[in-house]
Image 1 (spheres, rainbow, N blue to C red):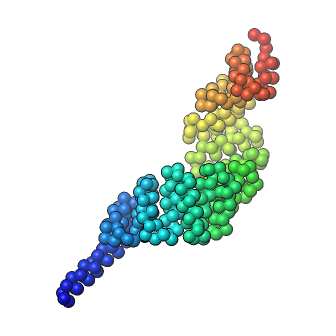
Image 2 (cartoon, one colour):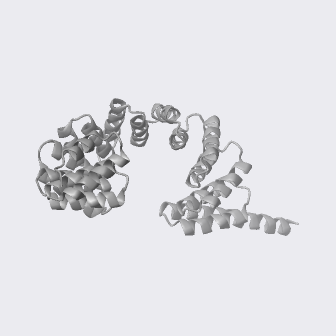
Image 3 (cartoon, one colour):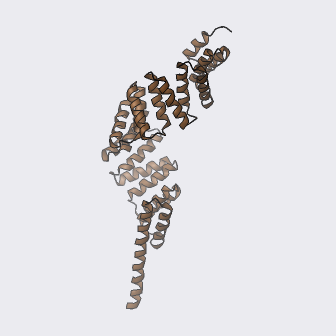
Length: 336
């Protein structure tokens, strides 16, 4: 009898050690971002103990990082079945649903996570992002504000700033981007968008400073060069603006905004041939851009191509019948 119990309890002890070993291995590999190996270890744990919610949850995290969103949903669902009050499992299942564009399901999961744990700040942030995608901007702002109330972070301020910008609340958005930068001084995107707002409110020096800082932090943000180019243009540094627009085009050859901005600057400098090429590129990328036709028409006029100019002005008016500048330009063309 004693020998039999010894065999039973001995096996149980070995099994427990195996579970602890593979779980620890899975966690270590996950932390090293070796998600595939982590999944293998967690699967071994589940084979030995199929009733541990934490193991399913952890395996779901690893699957999520490998973009196996269906698998992540399955594992988090199993974790919830085993532990119905598992707020984090609801939250992470919602994240996987966002990746699969199941926004309704994602909101339901985030809401359930909040119901189970009202202090789970990231669940509010997740739900805010989904509300934003669905066009509920005010609802998104409420959720981001709740996130900030619970645990201020640069991401929450940045997200709320984006939402406020969508509502045209430039002042509030600027304040949020500034707060995000205070919390994360190397937040290039926050500098970039704050700079674009400064351009909009005609603070061109401030815009140029923010764009320059964003470029210093991340030289690959092509739109930042466009922002700085626009500010330089407005401050009279046309050559500098062209350099920035050209850099943006080097980074992203099909960037319409940079070709258009460079074309405007080249027109100002009297370089009509290259300006015409820029506007032609814009039109190829965006055939319904009336302003590009109008400005190419001006370049063609300066190059002596009256008929070409007339054709472009006509197209601009066709696209935008109340285009006052194009109407005046075509009426002022010399008779051919």
